[in-house]
Image (cartoon, rainbow, N blue to C red):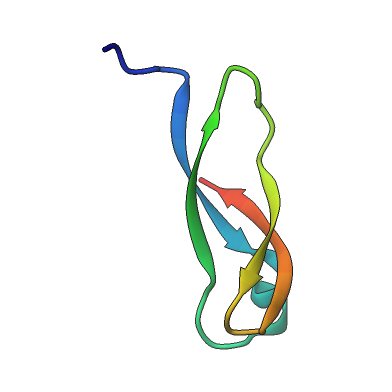
Length: 60
């Protein structure tokens, strides 16, 4: 079986927590197809520090 070279692992970081200054950082690891999705990924994920769903944006 050949591995798909278009699929890359990315880190998602919470945007609201960065602005609010709350201690800790909510991060998730996921994969995306860099051929189909060239822009940075944005998903709504749960932030355990803020105890609500927030927008997590892809970081480098």
